[in-house]
Every structure is written in C-alpha cells, then in structure tokens.
Image (cartoon, each protein chain N blue to C red):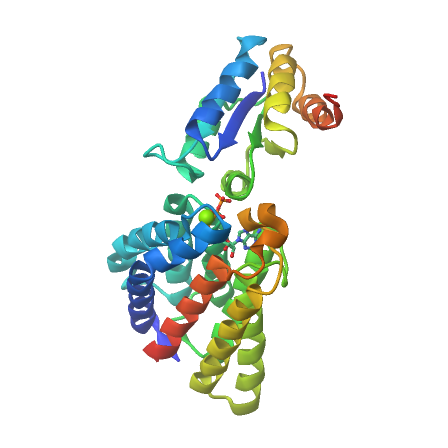
Length: 126
Length: 207
Ligand SMILES: Nc1ncnc2c1ncn2[C@@H]1O[C@H](COP(=O)(O)OP(=O)(O)OP(=O)(O)O)[C@@H](O)[C@H]1O
Ligand SMILES: [Mg+2]
C-alpha cells in the first residue's frame, strides 16, 4: 500500500486530517507530520523525514501538504531521498487525504492515487 | 576578499545581528504575516552558531553548504527552506576553495538567488526577499565590473537592498503568507527583504 504523509503547520490539523482519512480506510498507512517539535506552528524537516520513513515501502509514498513552507520543506525532504519513490500531491488537504486513503487501502498504484486525489480539487460542494 | 576564517567570523556576526533584530523582524511579520520571521531566523542562526566550531578546517563551499543545511531544519517557516537552499547553492557554486574573491562572491550570490527563485517559485516584484537580493546583486555586479573593488561594490549592494526594502512597501504581495492579504499588504515592508538587507549590511561592515 502507498504511504500517505499529511504535512501541516498545525500538529492538530495534520492529526485530524489523518484521523478523518483513516475513518473510511483504517488499513491505509496514513501518518501526520504537523507543527514543530515543541508543538508550535510551522513545518519540520525532521518530522516529515520520520513520517516518510514510517510508512515507506516499494509502493511509494505521497505527501499532501498545506501552504508555503509546508510545500517547500516537503520538496527538500524528497530531494534528500533521491532513490525513493515519493511525490507531493497538489490537492485539497482533507478531500485529497480521504480519497487517497481509500485508494491506497484498495491497493491502487501511486500514479492512480495521485490522479484521484488531484481530481478531488474539482469536486464542487455547492 | 575573504578566507574561511573570515567567513566564519562574518557568519557569527550575521547571527549576532539576527538575534539583535529578532523582535524587529517578528514585528514586521506580525503586520503582514504570521509574526514569526524573527523567531524563525533567530532559531535558525542559533543552530548555525552551534556548528561554527566544526567549520574551522573546512573550505568555503563546505562551510556555506553546512550553514544552509543547519538552517533548513530548525527554522520552521518559509525562510528556512529558502535561505537554506540559498546557502547550499552558494556553497556548491564556490566549491572547495579556501579564498573567495569578488567574482566568487557574485557567482555565489547569483546561485543563491536562483535557488530562492526555484524553491519559492517566485521572482522579483512579489514582495519577498528577492526584492532586496536581486537589485543588490545587480548593483554589486555593475560596480565590481567597473571598479574591481569589492568594498565599493558591497556598499552599492547595500544601498540597492535598502531601496528594495522600501520598494516592497509599495507593492502587493503575491507570494508567501502576505499574499493572503492582497491589497492590505501595501504600505508595509517585507520581513524577508529586511532580513536579507541586514545580512548584506553585516557583510559590508565586516570587511
Ligand atoms: N515563495 C517565496 N519566495 C520567496 N520568498 C518568500 C516566499 N514565501 C515567503 N518568502 C519570504 O519569506 C518571508 C517570511 O519568512 P517566515 O520565516 O516568516 O516564513 P513564513 O512565511 O511564516 O512561513 P510559512 O510558509 O510557514 O507560513 C517573507 O517575508 C518573504 O520575504
Ligand atoms: Mg512568518
């Protein structure tokens, strides 16, 4: 199964999104990397590295993130692991995580999961 | 212009300056951001300071790369990956040299700016650190080509960076947190442009 890492400035938000994503796909390897070590707001290179390590397999890992430094730091983590199959996904954090977790628990490929998560961006709510 | 020992001294002075201006930078970021730029930068350079004693036998490229790597992790905000990438790229551009001249400095600064643009997907005119760094680089390059005098060039660079910081007051932020404010970001100077300008000033006064 493809691992899913949720990166947010907020520890609580990342945990909440991971929790929500697990609701319909409890087997999916979803893990949160939110906030700084002391619990304050920000993005932590080390936390993201640890999160990726904890769900990594040959199936790959996708990273879903909020804005600004979350994107830049995730990018640097990926650059620091050139031999691994890891991609960031440009999608709404909550919807994308839910879709990706379901797809991952159904053993879909990393490419298909990324596509499904990206498509969640165009789902209209109203 | 400088050798490894002098470079370490400059980095120490930059850190001291950043710690001194921590509240000022945070205050600027309070107005158009999330009020952490000074805190982020101070935390980053504290980490750099811890590494300084390991740097004494290293070449200039390795020192700059190590500074960049030390900045990425602890900062926590956009300035971490941005300045981190900048210093790493600068180090890669200089390579294993123990002395750096004006041309080396300009080459490193150019690589640093390109690194920031790549990491931030940004360019000049978006109310970021690039609005201090790019005009500073252009002014320094012109001056150094004309006079071959690094001290004169860095003075021109600082002048241009200060103008660049002033210019950030007049424009709308389209990158970074301040971009969420849209027009409300006008009238306020960019914290990252300010910290970039501070670093150039320290280099100027250290030579
Ligand atoms: N995409 C970008 N390109 C260039 N510079 C940027 C970019 N985004 C932010 N900056 C610079 O970073 C400065 C803010 O740094 P700071 O340490 O406060 O990070 P932050 O914006 O709080 O990070 P975060 O993305 O985590 O919210 C801005 O003033 C600006 O100069
Ligand atoms: Mg900030």
